[in-house]
Length: 341
Image (tube, rainbow, N blue to C red; front, side, top):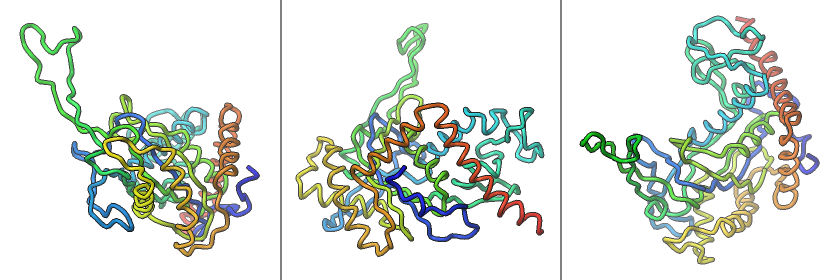
């Protein structure tokens, strides 16, 4: 952990926004045929190809919740696996019971949130009259570098009978459908922003990003995505948008002749170009950068985190520190605020 400036993070999550921004800059690279869709169609947007190249193109998009929700669920799975929240189902948000028979917090996603877990404090919640907490993970729509036409493929899907055929007792099934899928090696440059998190809670978010492998619909069958972390930026404000970052990379790839449809972009080339863009991009944003962690220093930091979480004792310790930090915030600001009413 020596390569990350630990002293920069607040000792406790503040009650009001205080400008402690930690950005995780990455490339999300598809490794199978994921589905990023709404109402049965892949999500797209018509935007300029680059910052320099102004011609409009249609790009695939990943909406913000389709990015953070899988990462959030991975974190919740870990909290449940290591005995920090209950695995008992909750069916009624109005149920006053807060713990199971083992004393573990009852927590059901989008039904009833335990208000002092890392999940609730980091990613926020708003369920009925149980209160709300604003997310401290800021995300935005991600855009593919390559155009929609070069980034998707239509597949005919069927649902055969147990015999393996599409007919049974002389009748042919009509269970045939066509669905567009995102193809492998489509790259979505992404800036994931955390604000005012303590070091344990930031590491909780980063671990979720590193562990999440499936995104989009039908994640049990497809949806593999590789999150390649390029940089961690500690600064006092927000930085470039996903769209701007993507457009800059597109312009540089055109100069390097790295876009040759229908061939996919070489992820290694895209990574090299993106890493070269980041320092100048930050300079243009006008934020005060406390630390830009890239290259070998970033690799050592990520390797140390991966080594720590590769053991049950290590990952449990990480989760317990994050839990203690979120519980401290709850006790400092949520419980006291309610008591004053």
